[in-house]
Image (cartoon, rainbow, N blue to C red):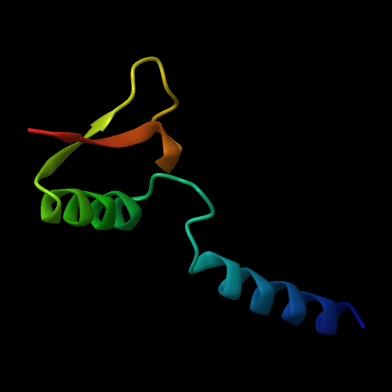
Length: 62
């Protein structure tokens, strides 16, 4: 039974691991930067925000 639970936990972790869940990971920031650049802007961190969260960054016009 413990082995089954361990396998289920690993499988669930693999599913969740593919999502950023709001964290400012390298991939999430790179994607946000590409989207912002396509709009003609620059991705910048908001003042006094938590750099670990993706919503702490905003696209600003050049």
